Length: 145
Image (cartoon, rainbow, N blue to C red; front, side, top):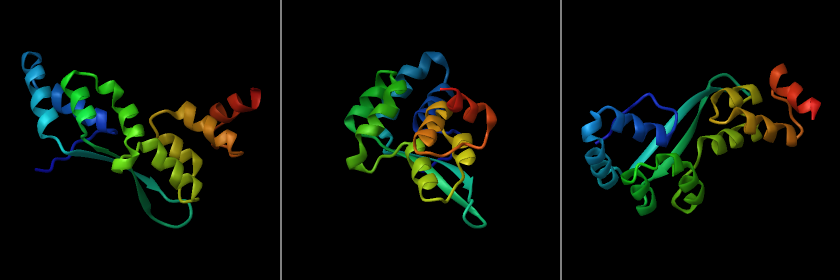
């Protein structure tokens, strides 16, 4: 079965599904979801800066036994860490893919910062690489340090 939800991350998708049920049923739903979910793909469409059009930046999570356990134990806040360590399974965080697209010159820094999960950390990474975000409140913080 496939489903679409308006969420920005794999953990957000799982939380949205669980939160759709009454509190009294959420523990049971977590168990069922942990055994039936195979993968989650979340995407953000980004305006291209190198040519007309858009490109999809995505986060991809495969449900491994570790992630299944996090869902069952209501520890979805740790899913990003599990995705980072799951690269061998093809997993990828949204911010990592946004960085790849920015590094290739496909999307502008400001677009990447607007779509990422952690704008502060992403802006700092751009500054360390010698770039600017193009937004005074983020670039001035870097200039002051």
